[in-house]
Image 1: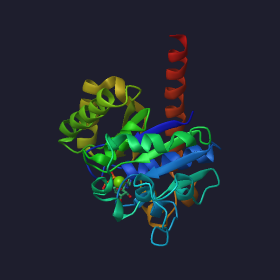
Image 2 (image 1 turned 90 degrees about the vertical axis):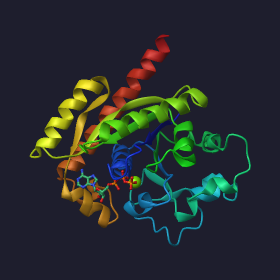
Image 3 (image 1 turned 30 degrees about the vertical axis):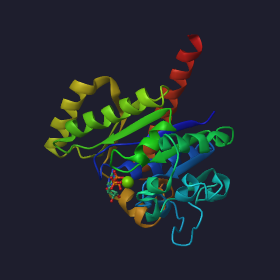
Image 4 (image 1 turned 120 degrees about the vertical axis):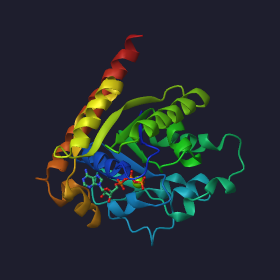
Length: 262
Ligand SMILES: Nc1ncnc2c1ncn2[C@@H]1O[C@H](COP(=O)(O)OP(=O)(O)OP(=O)(O)O)[C@@H](O)[C@H]1O
Ligand SMILES: [Mg+2]
């Protein structure tokens, strides 16, 4: 069974896509067969991995509307072990073209055949409580939540956790929170320091040990259509994402052991 992880936060610009790309790339560098599915109409995952969405015709919108076979929508990326199902703006409001009961469960059904092929499936989501985020969470066993020091982040975090709980209760009892990932963290910024201390107090158990600090190299890598590890392997964010992959793998393995003892 592939480990399916949705990267989610209802707040925009917190590093969801950056985390999805660089976590997936880290798994691939560690020779884990990895698929990244873009569930955001902005389609930034494809660009970040060197897949030209302007010439791609088989995408996630086609898969969800039964027009494209999921195997045909899987594209190569700049990494041998990493494949990608891209998204384009046609994904926006796609649910209007779906006539099925519980449309949020379609993606879960579509990826069933992929579980025996991949070790990890990473899904990038938009910053909204909508069909796409719901579909991603329905298809996932894990939700990973990137979070920044934005002052009202706690309110949005609570809404994000409530959305995860809602999908878990309605459709997907196997869904768990893998953790909260502090991103865009800047030690020189007193708000970061104070904010992360607050976070530790309220959500202590959920905060991951790995922290993604602010690193211009991450931003530059995205501009060059590459994960940071291929742009500059010495970048601190390249190392941090490899650490993140290791930490996430350990969390998943620990959970598997716990479940097998039940
Ligand atoms: N650790 C970091 N250091 C420097 N820049 C970063 C870092 N993480 C993300 N960025 C930059 O911040 C911006 C927002 O990141 P990203 O697109 O990953 O956020 P998002 O949560 O996916 O946004 P949206 O909600 O719009 O999908 C991007 O320009 C990205 O390059
Ligand atoms: Mg994004």
